[in-house]
Image (cartoon, helix red, strand yellow):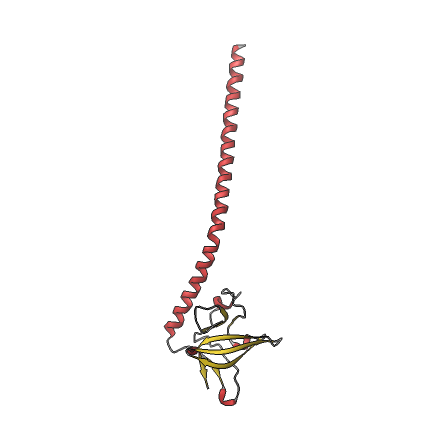
Length: 176
């Protein structure tokens, strides 16, 4: 009889210890899962910003390396036309931001770029969009207004005749 009680006690002890280990393993896996989800949530925005910064840096460097061998927009003023035209040339870089103010630190409203990663899905979230050239801007027309320092003042007019003032760096626009 003592032998049966002894075996019963040992069995209960082993069973209890095994369940305690399983319970602590479950708790540990929950902690790991919680930490993983927290880490993922906190690193995703940083990764997104880093990717956007990376796109910006690489594409800017490419344009700078091109020197004067870039595509510029033009305004045919001699024909009394103030429309701004830019036709993409895959062999020449261009990356033209339109800003809310004549300042490159102001909000970016529009982007004309030869780079797919600049244009596809509008990664810079430009309110007026991102395009390869003005020919792809079916919803907008750009018109030259004046030159202000190192910037060209223009209006972007949509199909509903709503206009938005946009400033481009003068180095990207040839007035003809």
